[in-house]
Image (cartoon, rainbow, N blue to C red; front, side):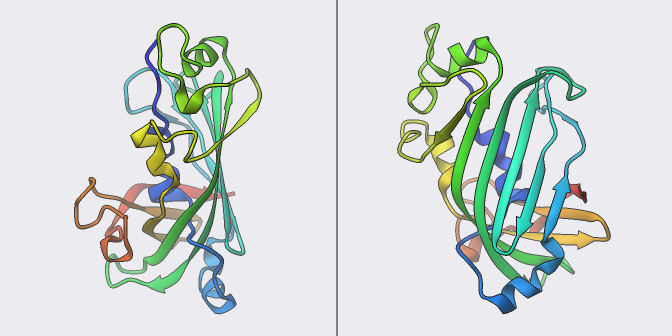
Length: 208
């Protein structure tokens, strides 16, 4: 079993779901009041064609955001294999020129927690058999492991999860659309305010 990079698993959280970049002032948070509450993603099949699926939820409140993302070994979100918890702070709220109705959403990651549910994945993440340990290994089945940028320094993709993201969001009724970050080095790769996302995802989360 090959090692698994978590960047692809939390990309939605960073570019489309979570928000942050430090505590905001009260006026700016008022402008983002439409974001407060819990938003839920429908069960969706993994894009790698491996037969798995995921179903995330994210809660925003007063400058804090928490994503919970269970991942499953089947296409119908039944048999859980691991869960990601991603915590961030957020600010923004200013309208952008395009897309119409969208607002700024800046993300500063605070914590990434992984809870592995199967023996096979515990072995894979710990580097057995023949794999490089993920973020230093030390995983125990059904136990939260708090990952840090230092732990994951040797995993270039996963280390990016801990970097700030400059995105957008839009609320339409009970639907919450997030921004899509472009490829690394592109004009909209979400790495700086000047390179903020400019396109909204067609997929959305629903207010819980």
